[in-house]
Figure 1 (tube, rainbow, N blue to C red):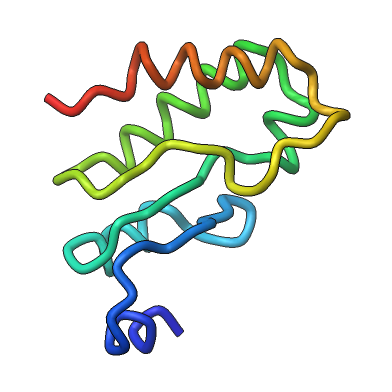
Figure 2 (figure 1 turned 90 degrees about the vertical axis):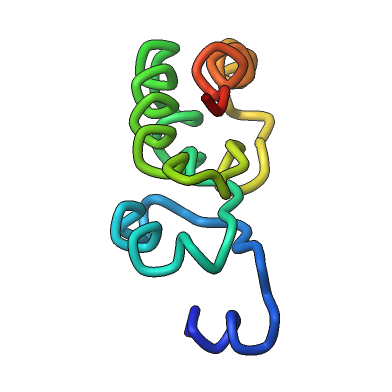
Length: 102
């Protein structure tokens, strides 16, 4: 379906849910034609992980998605009240720490 989006002029995919997609493959196939927004798991990591899990996922996703630009780091979906606040705050701290294009 993504090629159809490209053909009609879509230039950003949001959300990109890691549980349903192979992020590396999506980036390889469409990274020259699309930007991506999301990719940080709200179903696993932000909801049930630790701060260290959040850090590891941020690093992993950035390593996959930031090649040649075109990535906006964010939760893959909405932030819910049941998510630990320390995970949410750490996501933004780690985004600032690791999410800088060089």
